[in-house]
Image (cartoon, rainbow over the protein chains, first blue to last red):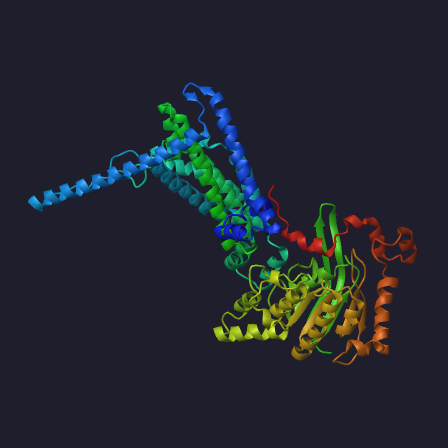
Length: 331
Length: 306
């Protein structure tokens, strides 16, 4: 915990500028070198090592991509995204123009508005992944927090449910996925489905794998409410609901958030695997498709995805930390 | 004296431990008048807190019981407000909100919004904490937090105020300050107070009566001492007062001559000094197995998910 709080210090830009203006003060210099310089040196050394060793690793798709190749492909992916957007805009324009023409000649004619049929770009896929992971994480939270409160409040219930938690917690998403796929296919039957089946399958798999840390931490937080505070609540004769709302939940908020952060990390990790197998059009599918594609740029493009996955995971964790600071009383 | 305000009759308290039954209290009897300030004093582990928790309704006596104003005490309730040793304020609420939680609960039907607000501020002013109503417990000192704890208890308009070593965790100067404040408040409101203490001076200074408890296990009321000192009392003036000195002397002699400190005395000397049942019990239990007040309190709340 303490290392995490330390490393987040250099993030805001104003401090950056402050450090630059106080450049001459030795204390500031030492601090800035520790907060900024050392991470930069670390990254630089890693890039040099990567650049030098990558060409020596030969695969059937050419040598392993070096940082420069990855950079090039990142630009390439952005280009593809931009031109695809342009084409989509043009498609919409043409469609509108055609529909207007039809309506002009025959006002009663039924016009259809079709969405742009082009393939999703890398950035669209990032969006899909984020929506999927957040839906799965939200569902996990909605299940895990109330259940955790019950487990924490009632030790008989805890004893009954504890073995189930211990058994299901370590199950890999890859094991759940076939089952989830079959169940979703069998039960989610609709002529006009609101969600894609692949989306539901990925989301539910994410939920199944990510709810455990929140559940466990919530129950621990609830069970660890200061006995003095519980006695205060008893002296005041607070009802079960008021006691839960005013004493138990606020008291366990720090623990709940610790659980939520771990859960979100797991959710993001699980999502990529789930999308690969479920063919949900997100980052997982991107990686899988590039792998199947097997062109000379595939490895570089997969490496772009790897870095994007890592960076987004980092941002998600920061986001949770920010919310935790807003909500938790002990921060 | 007619009917007592609060009466404990034949109270036994036994705890189930892995090593079998542990008898903490054996036949405790106590009668308290309205407006009386009673201190419970005794060595640690003698069951003072257990007595207080039974009056509070937080623990159920194994045998015997407690009657307040003609009603038997079975559950905790705001008419028996408790001041805890470690303030027990909700750390996520401000000073004001902590008192508000109590006032909203106790007077939710009988007071208007404005009346509640005035009543909260009145109680915080009583303990001289009106300047820090928007601070959280983590931002104020231990003494200040304890004042808020007292304000919260007073805001419930209790018929008995129960204080579990309220000043035990404070430094000597802060403690003296709060003792004076408590004396003034008690005289104003004429509230009935039961206070647990380890501190002989505190007991003599504040109390109308000091109840001295024998060592546990199977602790009971050893002696009672009426402190016939006029109020208001002044700690400096009392230092030479013959009655004060005598009371102090009586409590000290009970604690250090009649009841030896548990665990500290040699088993041999315990055997020669006294041959009561309770001391025979002391030998049977090694110090490690005798639960402290704190452990006894925690037991009902213990939960674990491995």
